[in-house]
Each structure stands twice: as C-alpha cells, then as structure tokens.
Amino acid sequence: MITLSALLAGYESLRRFFEPKPVGNLLWVLVAGVIGFAGNELVAIYRIRVGRRIGSAALVAVGVHPIPMTSPH
Image 1 (tube, rainbow, N blue to C red):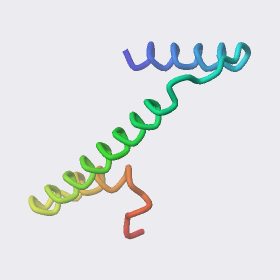
Image 2 (cartoon, helix red, strand yellow; image 1 turned 90 degrees about the vertical axis):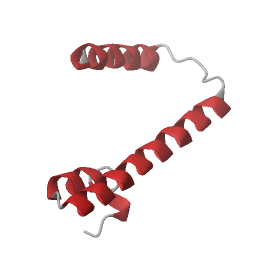
Image 3 (cartoon, rainbow, N blue to C red; image 1 turned 60 degrees about the vertical axis):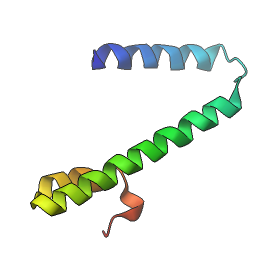
C-alpha cells in the first residue's frame, strides 16, 4: 500500500508539474497543515515523555526524530 501511494503521489506530482493548475482553497490547505504539524508535535512529545518514564531509549529516539528543531543535539 505504501508503494502504491508513493507511485500515485509521484505520478500526480509529475502530472501537475507539466500541467499546472491554480491551487484553490488555500485557507483549508493552511488549516490542514497546521493541524497536521500540531498533531505530529503532540505525538512526539507524548512518545518522549512515556519513553523517559518507562526508561525506553528507543521510544525517546522515535519521539525526538520528527522534531529535530527541539532536540538537544
């Protein structure tokens, strides 16, 4: 399923590159992006907290990976 999604995304991006169309509903695109970003941040924070509480370096690493701007490295 991941391969199929990647192929479809690649096809659509190439198609849009050669046949551009104006982007509509920019407000909804912005809202969806902000919601997605916030959701990813909340999940990462949750993983870090739980990983530290249970002593799981792997879970902390998975939580830190998507938010490199706030990681201590």
